[in-house]
Image 1 (cartoon, rainbow, N blue to C red):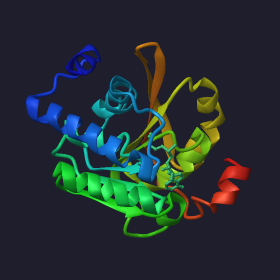
Image 2 (cartoon, helix red, strand yellow):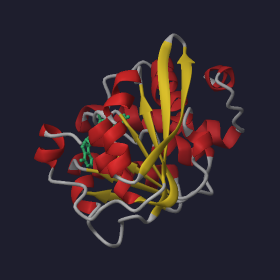
Image 3 (cartoon, protein in one colour):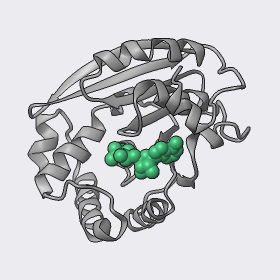
Image 4 (cartoon, rainbow, N blue to C red):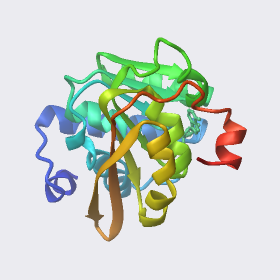
Length: 225
Ligand code: SAM
């Protein structure tokens, strides 16, 4: 499995490789009970979850919030790679939050917190709003809705890093949302992961998000910005 990381440019020490091995075991053990991932074959989990999660890590250089973490992606692989960063995981489903807390405990990861709740509600809480240097999200919603979930959490000067596949259309659909929410599309990076396209989208937070955002979820979904 080490080669899968190396081929993607990640040279991990023995301790980190051991943590990924343990992560794979814990994920496999709890998968049925918590319905975490359809990908179960070991090399696929390594490539499509672990290595994939690391593709955006170079853009995360400070405390970060991961919205809709599910089985822990991309937050837990990023935290294993960069243990010095404080990571906060936000997840709406109670059972998945239970799994994430167990995972963090079993991996012995420090400076990591799980919040069980919905992004569009928590983003109005003063304790979390515009408090994070970085925000990440993978496979949670289409980009316009995702920006409304995520950008309100990011401090001015911070960045939102979105993991997408072929994202050309989503990027143009999200232009208005990015602007209204105080962001600016900074860059996109395309990565070929053994034939699968991953696009990392970096949106910088230039202005405060107006108080009325995020709206209620039904509105976000029915009338994207
Ligand atoms: N990010 C993980 C990954 O890449 O494997 C999980 C992806 S899963 C398809 C989407 C996750 O986002 C689910 O666990 C779901 O409960 C969570 N989610 C969806 N909308 C959310 C919201 N508004 N606030 C918090 N979590 C949300």
